[in-house]
Structures are given as structure tokens and as C-alpha cells.
Image 1 (cartoon, rainbow, N blue to C red):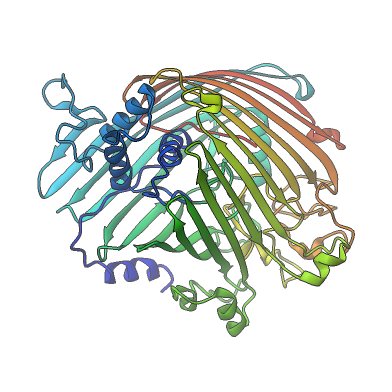
Image 2 (image 1 turned 180 degrees about the vertical axis):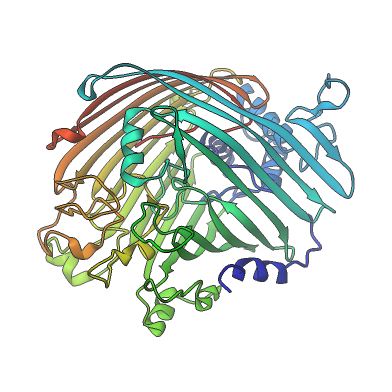
Length: 579
């Protein structure tokens, strides 16, 4: 039954009488344009902590603001709003939105954002080619690299549309070959997965060959309740990183119900994920599966102030004999998961979290998150470094039009995650069954890519002097305590100091005296500068320089990477590997 639980329930909901929009793919640059408008206008039209956004909401925001003379938008802001209208023309109220002045051969690019378009009352279809070519040079004297050529070759297609204006559909399929920088190779060797992807096979001597596929169908159940079923990723939070749910791991099967009524948005998300890809569980044809259930409630206290509450639970097969499947108890859309878990006597792992966002003075957005893995007030106040004091936190500030300079934006963010956060226990002494309940997918963290046991500071300065040109500088500084022997995410190394979220927390070094950065104290400085030029709609050229330095007590981890690259992108977001 577990194979058909999501699909069966989804079909039972399929009674739609309301027009439905698909979502804009997760893309940090694209979403920065939307969040910037939200801050400047204090609009309250989009629940920004729940991503991705519906295309109809993006179009509605742009349509509303471009007509509003109250706000002093720059010429670049207005061009950005036109860009968002053109990119979501099927939902824009402007009759000529997205129209091309010179279609190719009368049938191609009749709309600025679409290679080919069908637009009838019963059927709407948009097809676009997807290309991403990168060539880079890398040097790292500490790892013996004097001049290595890195590359990425991506080809594919994107399809989106609707049937009868009621059922939306979306698909993005790409075929990829790549030779990633050395620090990314090291992460792949540790996890068995390409960051943000999953399965891969070797390509030539040191490269990777992999498909990237996501797609879904969606529709409205009522005027205020929509549902989505497919494969992809989601993001919860207003930060550059998320401590609750990020898009760092690969795509997974999910069913989402999104309710927006009055001042509330309430999300139910049910997912099926890969528990382990490193071969520690043999005998099954497929990779072993794990499951997630998530509730997220946002309340618009004011147009410019939101608070949110989050809970989730991860669970899976109990052992190699019993195939538990998706536990139907967790499909309850309004119950607390901890109560269900206790009632079942199950070895599952639940988390809770709270976040807020406050836009003020039309220039600032203050946001934050508290994530609770374990909570014992007496142990916290005792200050003894108890291993289960696992409360993570995020605080951040976005400042747009810095010092009155139009389209110069700054974001500052700090993240703190104690040792052993997101991990769970294994009740077996022979196999690590914590794979089924820790907060991971495909051996990759479901939250911050650094896992746990770290401090992280992020500064991003972005300047858009003209509509087509964007300059971006990023500094990410991380202090993390790595395991003192071995880096394999799949098998417990000699010393588990709490950074590797795949490990059983019962293999911890000690119960008390724990602190962030314990183990092999390591600092990572990631500095990048990028120039992006938009040639035509959704066609970009990127020039990027990256300097990444890793200093650790253990020489194996040390690196001094310098990477320079040029990229051509068409209808696809940047591939970011910022860890």
C-alpha cells in the first residue's frame, strides 16, 4: 500500500472548480527580485517564508505595484516588475503582457519567455529549451591541483501549463555531465550524492553523469485550498539558509496541501525520501526509503509582520524484516506529531520550530528561526554542555537600497547549530537504523548543508546598476567541529563529535561538556564575486570567481581553492555549491 498512498489520496481530492497556477522554480536570484518588492512595498501579498511561490501570486504582486505611484520605485525596479509580468504572463492582468514584438517564424517566441506556446481556453502549454554550460579553471596547491579544468554540460527541457484552467502541470528534465571543483568532489565522496541531486555514474576519468528530474501536477480543491503532487524540493524560512527545510538535498516524492485563508497559511507536506545510498542496507532492489510528514502554519499578524510554527517527523522501516511503509497516523493534518509518535511507541524523530519576519521602513526585513530538536530547560540553565541541548537558531537582516543607492542590497545572516542536531539513534548494534529517522534525504542534510556543530556567518552584497547587469559578492564564514577520524557519512568514524548528521547519536564522545566546534576545529572561508548579464529574457552569461579556504586541525581537510568560471544559462537557475 505504501507505493500508492500519496497518489490515491491525491486523486480523492481531485475536484477542482478554480483556476490553478503552477509554481516558479526555486531560484535565489529570481526570488530576490520578489522579496525585494515585498520589503519595499510592505505588501503582505506573498507568504515569503514558504517557497516556491505560485506564479499567479508573483504576477499579482507585479501588477499591483507597477500601477502604484505611492512607492518610489527605481527604473530598474520597474523593469524587474515588467520582467516578472512577462515571465508569468498567463496570470498578469495586462492584456499585452509577455507578447514578443518579433516572433520567430510566426510560431516561436510569440511570448518573450516561451520558445513555443499553446494558449487556448481549454489548454495552455509552454515549452522551453534548457541549457547550462560552464567552463572553469581551478587551482589548489594544498591538494596538489595547479590548473584543473572544471565543467558543466546541461541540456534539457522545461514544460508547464494547464488543462481547462483547473489542473496545472510542470516538468523539468535535464541530462548532465560535470567535473566539479575538488571541494565538491570531497563532499560527493563523503555522501555518495551530488549536492542537490542524487544518483550518478562516472563520466570519463573524474567526472559525473546524472539526470535531474522534477515535475508535478496541482489544482485547487476549494478557493482557498490547493494541492500538489510530484517530485521536487521545498523551502521553509526567510533566510539564505533554512534550519527547518531547505532545497539542498535532491528531489523527493511529495504531496503538499496549501491552505490560505484570512491571515493564515497552513501547509501539510508528506514526503518519501531515500534513507541511504551508500549500500549499508543490502537485499532490497531499491534504495531503502524513509518518510517525512510536516506541518507549517504562518500567521500574518500585520501586513509587514509574520510569525510561523513548524513541526515535522521522519520515520521509516523498523528493521530489515518489517516493511512499515508510510504510517497513516501521520496523515492527520492537524494533530501534533509527538502525540502520535508516543501513542505508536515508534522510534521516529520529531522536531518543532518557530520563525518570524518583520518588514519595516520600506528598506529592512528582520527575520529569525528557532529550531528545537531536544529541549530540557533544567539542562540548558545548568550550562553543563549536555549532548541533547540541541536548539538551533538563525537571525538575519535584509537591507535594500543601502544608503539610498537604488538596487544596492545587503543581507546579513547568522546560524548556530549545536552538535548532534538533526541526528537520531539506532536501536541496532549491527546496523545504523538512524538513517530512517535522522533529518536527511539521500545522505544529505534536509536543512543547512553544513549539517551540525557549527557557527555560520553570511554576508551578501548585490548591486543591479542596470536591468540586465547584476553584481554579487558573497562571504560565508563557517566554524565547524568535524569528526577527528574519517569523513565517511555512512559508517561511524572513530570519533563522532556531532557534525555528521548521518551518524547514530549514541556513538557520541561524551554526555556532558559538549560545545559548538568540538572535535577537529575547522574554519571555512567561502568568498565569491559574480557578474551576471541577461542577454535576452531568461538567457544569462555568468562570470564567477571563488576563493575557498579550509583550515583544520587535521591536515586532510585543509584546502586553498581558487576557481574562475564562465557560464551560459538558458531557462535555468545557477547551480550553487556554497559550503
